[in-house]
Image (cartoon, rainbow, N blue to C red; front, side, top):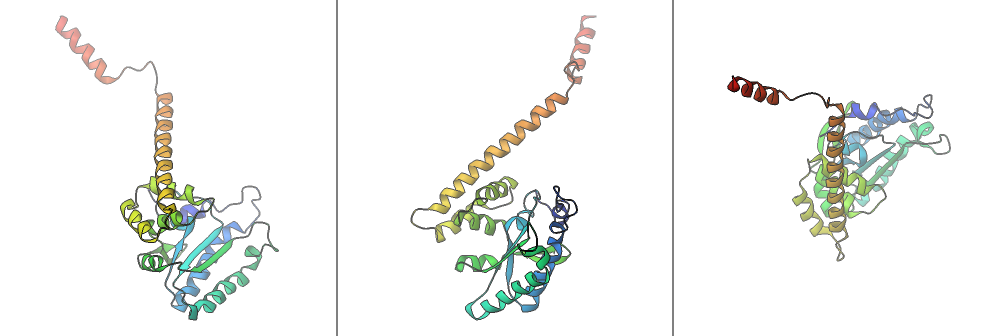
Length: 234
């Protein structure tokens, strides 16, 4: 189950304030920073909920998260790229100018494994431009490596989508995990949450389906059996 950038755009409406243009500016901000990264020749991958949409249903997002191959020599250049985008869209990104700004995070790879996964990013059209989106394995590995409030929810949603190679992610975690195996523990919890959410969704579907059925309706196979029995009696 995957989505598209159009699915996200359909959600970029401030339901509490329909006149607020900031949420709808996310595609323009995304195109701006991607264009700057491409012009600078920096290898990158979009992570976070934007990339999750490739594998799961779309969700409202207000942040752009990008990992780039930024060595010490190019770190200042990356800082300048992000600053230029924030300056151009200050009215929608500066917390002093808008109530709920769109955030942009551009960071270097945190280890050799992430640099390797960067090469596996998938290029696809996103918000009108070709963009490098992180693979499902990259996202799940990242969310299990780093503990954050929304990571467990995102990881469970990704697993429920059924498009990620869990064995590969386990192998990556074994290569990078600490002695306490925190990543493996978070992966097991995410798998459990995914199973529970999938089972719950199925049960809810069956309950709704039963409610729509007419309790007085007789299945066709029962009618056919009764008809055949009646003919035999004659």
